[in-house]
Length: 328
View (cartoon, rainbow, N blue to C red):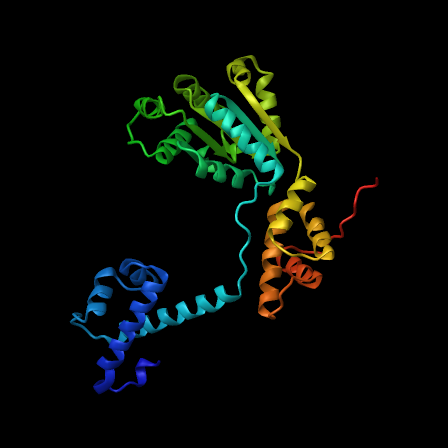
């Protein structure tokens, strides 16, 4: 519908049709008026007035914004119709090990370290564990959290306890955690400074809240080096759970491929080749997701090796790797 070509006599009738279409999309997508206003580029007040027919200004500009928003809804629906969805969380062999480690850390309580290659499911396992257990908080570290003070502010924010200045901040966190039998998972923990790690160790000591430091492979060397320093003996001696993940194991790959449904043996072999590359299971899932979408676009019921190869080219660079089984 092009509002520009609608004569003034029929404008209000066309506008009522637009409002009806907006109501339909609102109900279908479960959106608030505030979200629709934001997505269409209006202020909340202007959209409300337009929607209720009480706007006192010139309608045409906002009519055009609503037309564009409705067109974007149609575009999203078309994309979603062909876009595949990855399986929900898969309880792989590695995920079960990591969730058992988190359980031991929470109810021990204990300090734990999980270090390993990227893309093997560490973060997904933590999220799954948090979804199944009370008082579990996941904090994702980054470059901005190198100092102990910055880390404490992030902990406070994730916990949702009120801010207090100066030295009282850590006391507030400790009071909040006492008696909750909780678990704090620090993802990407390689970004933390030694002082930040020691601050968290102190919180563990005072509140008996389990803490798991989780990150990439160098995290293992980091904690190993701390263990050789007398100043950090209290930290090292309290680490009861330690898991090093070199890469995805074959059971993990097979479990995820099974979750994707019926895949030909040649497709599974191609996916195994992806799983042993950088990015591991995460890359394999991304390639399968793109390959599945490609199959849907051409109305095919199954993914082919050609789909996997084409998806690889979109996700990565270079030639598609070939999976080579280890010699017996």
